[in-house]
Length: 218
Image (cartoon, rainbow, N blue to C red; front, side, top):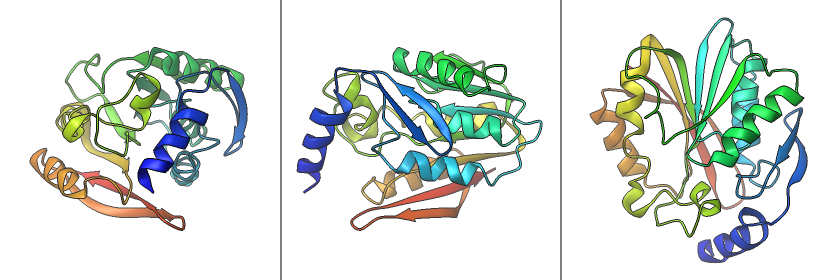
């Protein structure tokens, strides 16, 4: 069933040839080819709605693996003073910045093409780090599929937690949304190794899958 779901998602959504416009979580989003589409993958909207209930007034936030920028925009709308939206996909970095501008949040949100947080200096910078990384292990077919597959053994995201620890201000928080289909043992070990404590802050469930969202603190 998972293989079938990925086949359909890849061929009809992830690798679609045309730019699409979608209204999700109160945002009008332009989603170009190869960029993860929040109109089809409901985890993005669930995460954005969770962020909308936070008080991020005056905070500096980074959204890692931003895709269309929906989580970054939600953080800006929730009061964040500055938001950086990072993604290894250059089309996503551009989309996030353009969507922020189109939704009146362009002065707060900046798109950045980089792998995880590598392009950001490893010193305490952020009050809040958010990420909804690729949920499944396996080598991506191409740039579009990198929003679904996190590499063999999830190698493409293993460094996220150590990088987050280095760049998080004292008292800061990390919000991480994964899937019930993710390698939960791997995540648990990586989170603990980086010195974080995790608590379940929210969970969104559908018929065959759930999306737990964890708050990590030092």
